[in-house]
Length: 406
Image (cartoon, rainbow, N blue to C red; front, top):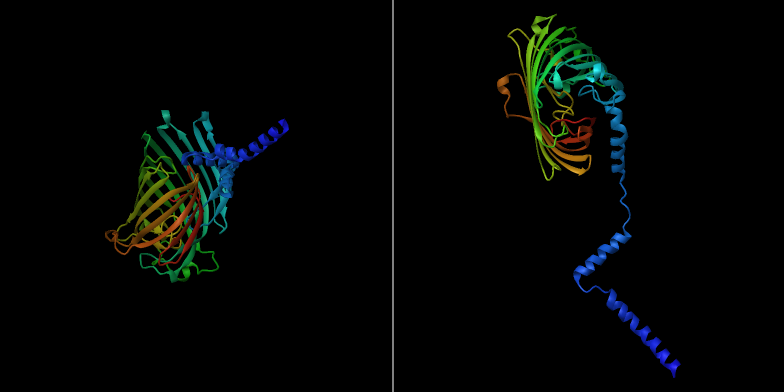
C-alpha cells in the first residue's frame, strides 16, 4: 500500500514539474521579457575587439606620432612644396636650449620626385611668459619639377611645362604676443633663388614654350631683400580645430638687388572659421584667402613668386600650380564628421580664380571643384589626409598627403 502511494506521488511530481517549471520561467510582462533578453545577451557577449583600422590608429598615436613630435632625433614626413609629392627625412630638435627656454630644430628631407631641402631654425624668448621672442632660420633647397602653364586665368593646360627653382634663403623675425590669441611679427629675409630647365622627362622644359616676357624672371639668378610684417589672431580649439577662428594678414616688400624691374609688394589675407555641433562631432569649416601683388608701370613680378591656385591645398580638382596671376582669390568649405575617434570624413567644395587686374577679383567665372575626403588626426593636427576631387575642368584628382589643409 505504501509503495503504491509513493509510486503515485512520484508520477504526479513528474507530470506536474514541466508545468511548474514553465510557470516560474515564463516572463509575465513585456518588460520582464526584455530584461531577460538583455541579461541573456550580457551572459553571451564577447569582449569588444578593435577592428583593423582602430588598431592601426592606436599604433599611429602610440608609436608613430611620438617619433615625429619628440625632442632629439625624429622622423620627418610630409611635402616640401605643393608639387613635391611625398617627402621623408629626419631631424634633430631641442626645446630646452639655453636654460630650458630656447629651441632649435634641424632637419633634412627629400621626395620621390628628387626634391630636397635642408633647414635650421632657432627661437628664443626675450621677455617673461614668452610674450616677446626672436626667431632665425635658413633653408637650402632644390625643387626640380615645378609646373607652369602660363600666366592669368586663360592659361592653357596644353602649355604645361616644368622648371627647376633652387637656392637658399635666411632671415630673422621679432614676435610679440600681447595676449594669447594675438601675435605681431616683423623681420627681414635674404633670398637667392635661381630658375633653370625642368627635369621631368614626360613634359617640356619651360624655355621650350616661354621666354622672359611671358615668364618674367626666367633662367636668371635673383637676390631679394624681403622685409615683412604680419599679424595673426588665432583662437582655434584645439589646433585641429573644432571651433574658433584663425585670421592672418601678411605684408611683404621684395627688393631685387640684381634687377630693379622685378621689385614688388605682396599682401596675403587668410580667414578661417570653424563651427561645431553635436558635441563637436560635426564641424563646418570655411576658408577665404586673398593674395595680391603691386608693381610699378615698368616692374613685373617673377613668375615663380606669383600667387598660385591648384593642387592638394587649394583647388583640389586641378593640377598643382594650374593657375598663376598677380592676384588670386580662394574660397573653401568643408562639412566634417567623426566616424571613429581620430578618424573623420569630409565633404568639400573649392572655388577660386586668378586675375591680371585687382578689380577682376570678384565672384564671376570662378573655377570650382567638389569631393570627399578622410582624415586621420589628433587634437594637434591631421596626420594623413585623403581627398578625392571631382567636377573641375581638369579631371578627377586623388590626393594622399601628410598634414591638413586648413
